[in-house]
Image (cartoon, rainbow, N blue to C red; front, side):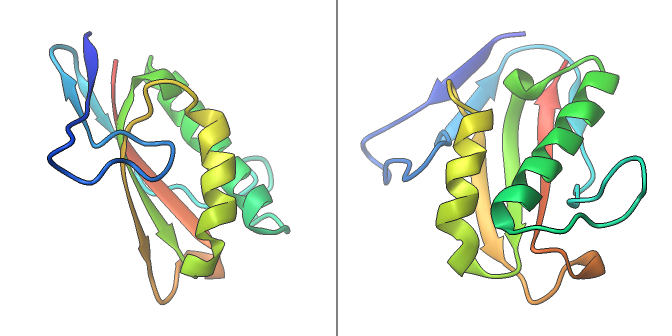
Amino acid sequence: MSKECISTDRAPSAIGPYSQAVRIRAGDLIFTAGQLPMDPKSGSLIDGDIEAQTVRVLENIKAVLEAAGSGLDQVVKTTVFLKSMDDFPRMNTVYGTFFKENPPARSAVEVSRLPRDARIEIECIATT
């Protein structure tokens, strides 16, 4: 698999830890379902602020990808759903710790409500 981060000055530069686009040249694609900040053992939504919920969501995504023979370094696109865009800066800081180099392309949107009244949900596309 070849993952190439695409950047051009003919479009707005990334304002966080994400790439404008990512090109893949081989491999199978994995499309994850949206992951909520749920404890995998109890099945319950975790308590905590947006930082704690973001960590839990990304740990859940990591586990799903590893089960599929992939990992966070193979993620090419994420979509972040936030209950409040006021949480974006703090989510973004945590998100950046999971995608330090060659971050995936990303969209982030505010939604009126998420399942179980979570503050965040993230889905992704990755390669194997």
